[in-house]
Image (cartoon, one colour):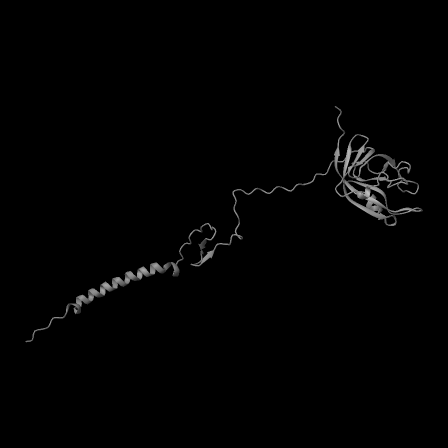
Amino acid sequence: MARRRRRPWYRRRAYRLARTAVLTVVLVMAGNRIVHREGHGAGTAAPAPAPRAVEAGDARPGVAGPATTPAPPPSARPRTTAATPAPRPARTSVAPRTLPRSRATRIVIPYIGVDADLMDLGLDSERRLTTPPEDKPELAGWYTDGPSPGEPGTAVAVGHLDTNTGPAVFGGLGELKRGKRVEVRRADGRTAVYTVDAIKAYEKDKFPNRLVYGTRNRPELRLITCGGTYDRRTGYSGNVVVFAHLTGTREPARKG
């Protein structure tokens, strides 16, 4: 009877079963590792990291994927300073208080060297504003039926431009400039201070009566003298008008 030959160990059934079991365990473990490692991208999203402060030349991770978002250039980023001062509130101009009625006594215009007494003026028979006497060119006149200095409304003062011998009280009126000061003193000792808004020249046949003499809510002033071309028979062809408004008042100086 022939003797049966023994199988090699690596072909025995026990070895094959053991090998199969070991491979199965290894594959299961490897599969778990793969699933755990790739689960963030394919399954539940991982929580996004907290963003870092962006500094010059830095980049922070994008929260939606692996791409990075570059930091904005320095010109696009707000600059930070130690302390930012609060903006100052805009200044609002306060209207000067108006004054009660009191007769005008003197007018002073420093820019053109006027310092003259004021006389009372009214209307003639044709309802035209009268002027100071021609033999008193140093005098200016105040229309007494209009507002007194510092009262609301349009106040009017007039004066001659020149005489046969030289300039009169308002000879330099056309040289006045916007922003210059006109002071009108009153019988009660107070002073109304006006600021020039404009200087206009009009021909007499186109004189804008409503614009010059019309009523205003705030205290305004008109200074009027002759202007335009001169003719020996008819006189001057137009007028120069200064427009001003009240910007301050002064109380009388206290004695002592």
